[in-house]
Image 1 (cartoon, one colour):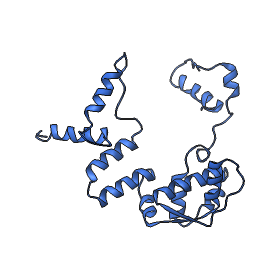
Image 2 (cartoon, one colour):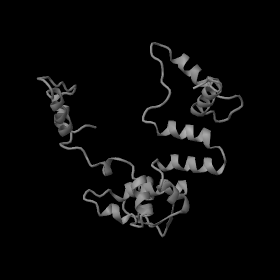
Image 3 (tube, rainbow, N blue to C red):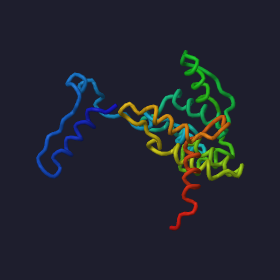
Length: 208
């Protein structure tokens, strides 16, 4: 999903400290078909956080429509639907119009609705996390199980998964290692939480 401008900008790194050569592993025809410039992030990324922050600051979702590169109603409506499912916002007085597909119609209806942030949504807006990860932590505090859910949240928010699949035909070995973290009779085994608990048990007597 690179743009031509991004690819050309990378050439400068090849000659930053000495003469160099930049090699782009793409055909000329494919390079010519790339967008001249990358789209603004607000048009590429989910809008859950911007929508939530706008509502928490009492600007309303109209703030997003005033941006220089404003996202469309389907993108805004999709974010509102996901936040409503989390209990972070409440939608009233929605009316569907425009798009013809069921998913797009539902999203457009959400964008046309009046959105109100809930008490949970105000808590989530204060956390520097994705809304679904933030709700996980809030529930962990309410249910007095912060430690395992904090581990799960950290693994969920990580840019890279904590588990890897071994190469060289060792997939079965990788799967067996993951299953080893599942507890007996656990209907929804969680590798991240269980592995952290196992590590803590193994090192509980270590002297630091």
